[in-house]
Length: 140
Image (cartoon, rainbow, N blue to C red; front, side, top):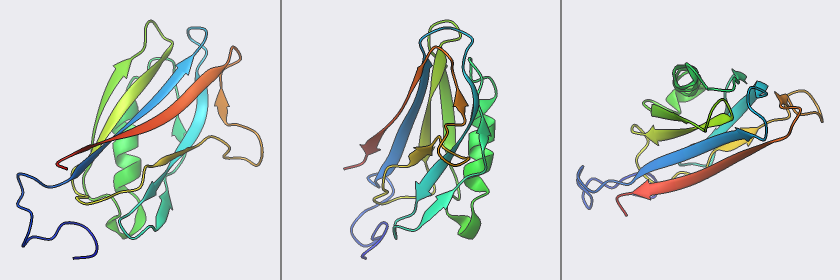
């Protein structure tokens, strides 16, 4: 089976499940705002970009927006995903972890698209910010 999980060799207790953490952190509290998008790659390498997602210093309600945006991608690219969010200090940003439940197999790390409108960033944080993505794989 060149893509995904071969049911003859792997059972559902050892399937590879990808978890991706996305972190937005500001240098000064209450300054994070603006928008970004997520570029998701399926097991075939095809890329899909979500609708713009709004940012806030605490990330309140952000997981619901991220889940809906990923599940709304065409071709059922993300059939099921769960999201959990952890705030950073007091209003200095947040980190959320995505678990791609419906996409077993090897997935390329998603990308954060900050420049939605030409060459300028749509993420606003006058005191500066960092945006990072890292991936953890379970079942290998």
